[in-house]
Image: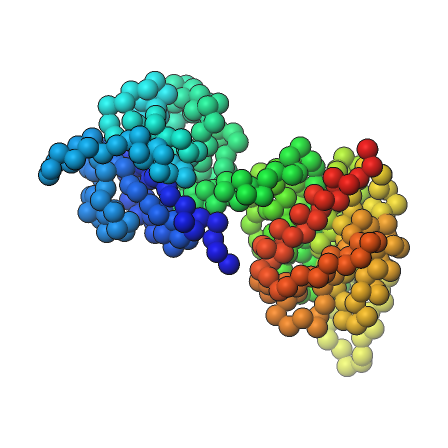
Length: 407
């Protein structure tokens, strides 16, 4: 799959910060994803990293001065502003922030910023006291209000607030922020203002303090859907079973272990949601009597009594209003569409995402998936794709379903 950054022209501004060494990692990641990078560095920035190092990575001369020292060639900041698809200033010092706000065009970087027609992304880098100072915070608020994108540590991709510690965000996260912006621009923000509930991962049903009933779900599909919904502008609540996965910090994550905990988390929140996508692989049964102590091996056979777990999808289907959408998942081994349609109707779903264990290299633990989206009007079958691309298909179907809801 072609990366969204492939062919994009990026102006990378580097200022005089100790974090300037990380700009090499940013360049490498941008180029790895297919972007073309032109570095503009301040005189102070050259004290921390040499232009020859940057030029070797970008295969382009580094721009620092208004005129070339060799032949007097003029570097046009206007042309750079027209050439770029985006400008990224990383690291950006407190001094440069102040110059950007007040239009102090005394170096090539700030002059290029003032001429920039493309979106600008700013990754601050300074010590905590400088960052926390009211003048720095005011400058960040001003730049953000002008439409600049502030990328700050710990925020996960594009920051909407100003909570950070001053340290520059990690290079891969910064580049992911650029990717997210261009993805959003290409797909739109069809879920802006919507509240979406998503379940992901397995549930574990205790047998004793050290054993449980579970399944092989990794949570990859549900987490990918949550990230995609957030990327499309939604406010997302992710009810996550016991998996070791990270998600965007702007997603409201609720960690649970058992089906009953997931049931409570979903039913208590569903009334406030515009839609729910039930991707979790929830255990159908739980142990009738959980032992408080570890069950010891015996000479005789061991019988485990089970009882049904509450049906989350069916309960939300009964709760669902006409202005809400409910999406379910079905993992089948035989008569796939027949069973999926039965579940769609029985549980009052708007559509159901069908997975088949017959599709090798998909489903549990895999990075890929192959799905069918089934509605009451028919089925759409998709090729095998990465779970991130599958999430895009599912969320696009959700937006279509929301748009077609009765008013």
